[in-house]
Length: 338
Picture 1 (cartoon, rainbow, N blue to C red):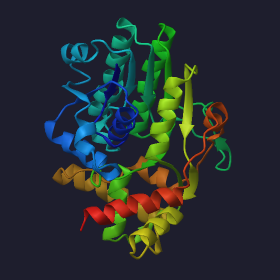
Picture 2: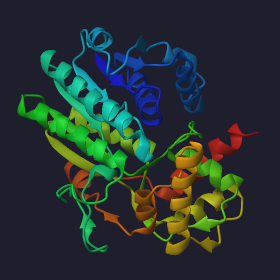
Picture 3: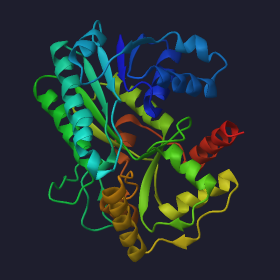
Picture 4: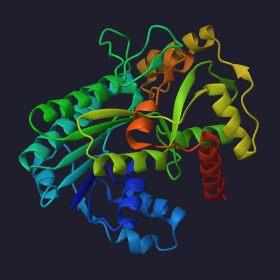
């Protein structure tokens, strides 16, 4: 039996759909009952038999930091997809990020070892990959992480989580790690994922950053995870990105697909420097949620180029064109807001 943590998230829900569609025996973890409706909604995008497929999943209420509930979730499990994570770039959320992303992953790894799990697939992020000093140099799986850099709190904790997985491999656990870029998929229009970006673009954005980012379709993430789990490959990590695009290009493509005006004003370094300081001041004085940090400004202003050749070569994998992903996600978004 397969265990999926984070089954109610973007990747987890799509992964569950593919696994049960393929006839796999699956148990999935959830923390909040109302989140289960998101899974049903995702299933309904792709089939008229959403309820039937959903009922094939064995759901268990569990928390990755609650050992008794985790032990129950691991009963009779042979393979684990660890998708559960906390996504936030707010510096004040650092301790919560550590608890969920690092400690929670350590708990999963420990139970994988004690339960003799055959293989673990952990979904990390390109945020946990090192950065190259020259912007035109390809970033690969071998690019070294620099702990002295001004990394975001999210990146630090995803890197720490990877260290727990590698520690597990030293103790006999077979594992693979995937590092996706910004994942494009429908159903989650609020929060910190790409879905909220589609919503913001539809509502109207005035400014575009001058940096670049890397994008990948949610189905490419799911398909590569399953292929890696079913393969003989182990103790490897893989960058999952279809294309590296300037943020302005991406915003223009989404705006066109959503039939709205794209942002036309460049967010200059000075404007962004003022913006993140005002954001910090608003949080400090009034307790408002952080929306823009110094590290985020650096990320959206920088040019980075990620290399996806390792996955292509090891699995003979072809990525979905980002134009196709944008068109599909935009269609679902426009249907949902009617």
